[in-house]
Amino acid sequence: MLRFGLRRCAALAFLPLSACALFQSNWQWEKAGASLADYDADVRFCKSQTGQYNDGTVTETTVRRIHACLEQHGWRKLSREAGGR
Image 1 (cartoon, rainbow, N blue to C red):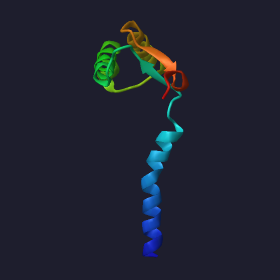
Image 2: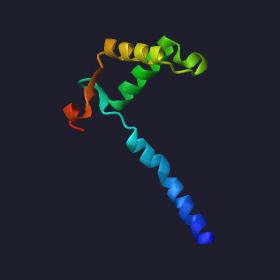
Image 3: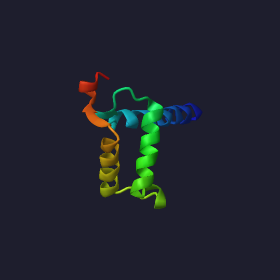
Image 4: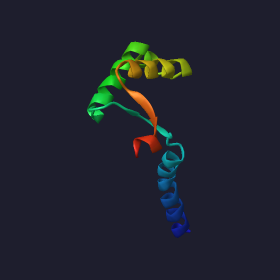
């Protein structure tokens, strides 16, 4: 019985990892010459400008505004295949 419990725990430990792989988007943001730190800074800025941090609610409208803000900061959405990743 203990072995079954350990196996179940081990299986559950891998569940979040497989879920991430399942729901990974097929696109990514890119900006020539930008680093991950640049992206993170622009995302924080765009979230603050769209009210994302007010109450933590994420809506389709909020996401669209964040995406538009990122595009205004020179980021563009590419398919993962086009980005070579």
